[in-house]
Length: 128
Length: 199
Image (tube, chains in turn red, blue):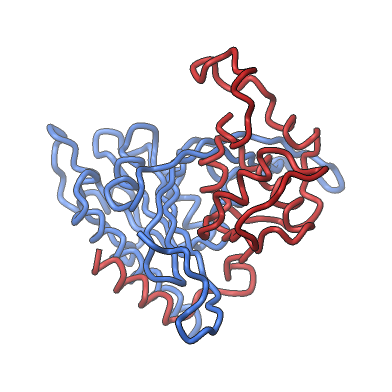
């Protein structure tokens, strides 16, 4: 667990032991978010620079707000926190419900990308 | 690298867009290497739980027959501009490919099927899947050192591909080579979309 706010005193197992907490323990056993669907490439941005600990928010929630000071995809948030995507979706649902993060869903549900996006991608790749 | 801006200097809010490209292929074919060759960060790993519906079994009317499979994916990111980010997801190929990847393929603008000529049959499930879904794809033959080189038309014939599907050789370790693969894919995807739109 790499979430900020972990108390080092209690860390009696090192990283090599693998995860010692079952994936949905950090969500209080909830497997589905209270709101939202969260595609892997939905983009997450924190709405505040900092959040004080409050009831109902765990260290993982706070870690997401910290990470998403810059725009990150759901997949990136999961990878950085070393948590399964399903777990992260639940945490994000909590944060959306408290208006602590903004989610930008990909265009894919409303239709195909338009011509200008294809061209921007091609030009962007050429410029790499 | 500064890509955290959500506003332009004019003050108007830019709605950022993320798009994804899948990189499919069997274990060890070089998917993560390909992603890493162009990604601005080292490839990240995440786990997704996918729902497998009971496709292929008839008389399922009204029956909830779903199983879940956990799949590990390596992915990378290319920031095209302040408001456009491209993600590349390496998706492990497997026999049950076609049943578990629907959630991943949703909204992907295209797919790279990475092939190894020593085990060409390994990419059949990926090709069948993308053909069936109508996802634009191309086949990139990763040229492993020591692998026998085949001509592209031989690969095309062996895979029984539609003549319109691009087939090219690549070196998944080389950034320029991978760039060429991705540009060819996006150009192909654009062509396919326009052909469909005018049908």
